[in-house]
Amino acid sequence: MENPVLVEVLRGDAVESRHRGAIAVVDAAGHVVAALGDHQRPVFPRSAVKALQALPLVESGAAEALDFNDAELALACSSHNGEEVHVNAARVMLMKAGLDEDALECGSQWPRRMEDVAVLHRTDATPCPLHNNCSGKHAGFLGLARTLGAPTRGYVEPDHPVQLEARAAIEQMAGIDLSAMPRGTDGCSIPTYAMPLAPLARAFACFGTGEGLEPLRAQAAERLYNACVDHPFMIAGTGRFCTEVMGALGGRVFVKTGAEGVFVAAIPELGFGIALKCDDGATRASETMMAAVIDALLELDEDEATALRPWLAPPLTNWTGRPVGSIHAVAEAFAPLRGIA
Image 1 (tube, rainbow, N blue to C red):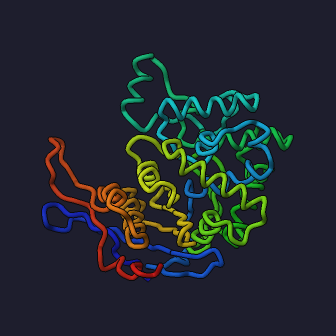
Image 2 (image 1 turned 135 degrees about the vertical axis):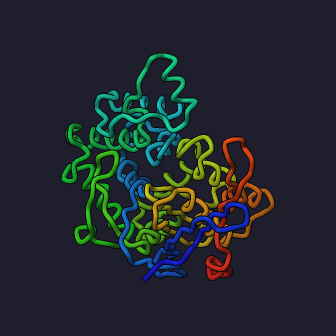
């Protein structure tokens, strides 16, 4: 089945490009409340599941033992820009675990923003693993390894105790056996498991509500949810969808991007989790898709609607800054989502 066109790119008044995708809206019991496209086709969620991978860090007592604060826990769930505040927080997390950046096995990565790249150039420095967008997640993995008494070397391998804990958390939250799913290696070297959008969305319905979870896991999910929505800058950074939308909606929504056009969300007041995939992997389209889902499901006040509007129809500009078109969600495609809450 070919997925529907969910986003169009206009140059002037003419459609220049189209982005197809699939979306699942699911409750904590696993019921598909609404769906667009093929929500049963497995996709790699990639970084979208970082908050689920962080659950063992909290419920094991490792976060408390290492005195990780909420901003640091948010960083453990992040795909950050590599800005100074992100780099320093990851460094402090490692110090609390008695480690330094040499323990990170995520690889080095240039910061996302040119301003931060320029800072490195001015000091004749090169990026290190702390600049990697996944350094917070990896600092959390290493903290868990230290608390478990597991080796810190090789913590990214599929059979390492830390990765087994992360996998088990995802399986329990999503209600799925990942051994039957394709496995790959993520950009930061940890294993990544494919799954359909419906169980992925169910995991975030549970994450946002705590429904169906054992008390310890529900408490861990609540702490991580609150850490992320209270410290949205740590989740991504300057100019990023996740940071700006969570900051604007004041805790009503948790959103997290993954690579290759994947996005997830939790909306506790509705009891829903959302997972979507833009077929061609375009971030510009997946962000617009998620903005359109939020707009369709939630009643927003004027300030919230104003903050979301630039993500619903981001303008296209040329090198002079002149508007030449726009990206917009296809209204008819998202109409079935309106009123389901």
